[in-house]
Image 1 (cartoon, rainbow, N blue to C red):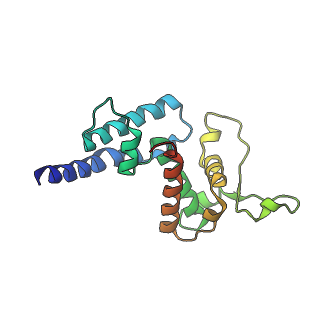
Image 2 (cartoon, helix red, strand yellow; image 1 turned 180 degrees about the vertical axis):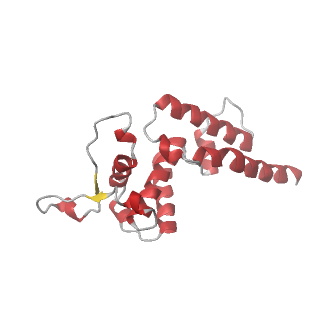
Image 3 (cartoon, rainbow, N blue to C red; image 1 turned 30 degrees about the horizontal axis):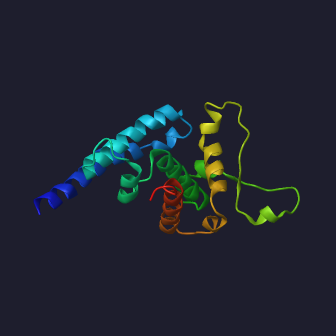
Length: 173
């Protein structure tokens, strides 16, 4: 009984002190170098080890899957895509909504029925490709078409996490 109480307290502590800080402003981390993402991933991995009590030698992917924690790169994409959904559905500030432009072709194509967004051309790979105006359409256009038609935020977030979770752990048993 005591160990279950400790485990529950441990999970709450990790969620309050570590996971929340990894998610705080993580949308500005889009496009940072892989070695920086790896450093953040190590923090999440150690938090998962703390919660579950597994050894450092054990594989971490099954543990993250069991805890239902998205890896850091997916958490960043989740935040930006959720913000994109809010901007498209007037749940975000107008300045964000104004950055998202529907993709319109000169002639009618099969892809015209998709609710894709236009990606602006950028000059700087270091900053331009990391901007919300570029990152949001990039991630939004990668989503399955049925997700573009969802109209409720909670439903969208649930579907998005499921989609990303399946992608992140497709090779993990």
